Length: 131
Image (cartoon, rainbow, N blue to C red; front, side, top):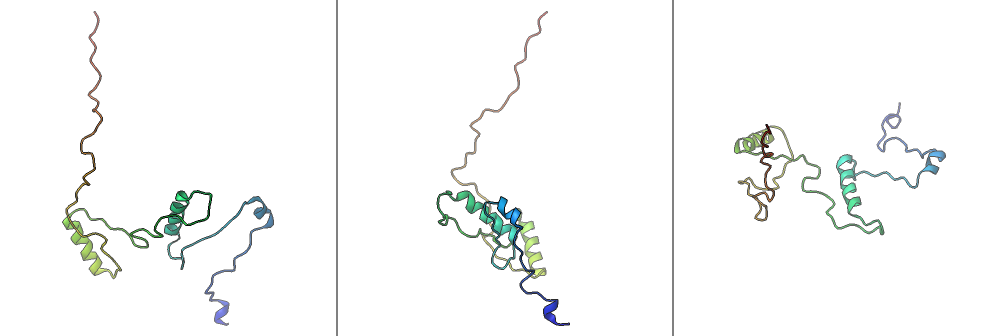
């Protein structure tokens, strides 16, 4: 038996849709990220770009092609203990990791409203019973 009979580097041969199915469609495309590593993330980025497109042209939209985490899992420890636990785990399990923001005390942006503009519900007024 030859290796080419059971090893396929390019995957299965892609077939064309049946002519009746193709006739009912107004266009059909398939896409994946280069290399096919994370199709879900790639489709999410495509949907974001589609939402930003005006639909009148085929020009690229003004957005970065990848988010800050891209093909990485995002880790957000809240406390110093959790941060130490994450660092311990990353030193134990071989990982490709990057620090996007340095560990620091969280701070709300200055333009965040700290007091609600809506008065809270204090309950209904009690009615006097008629005798």
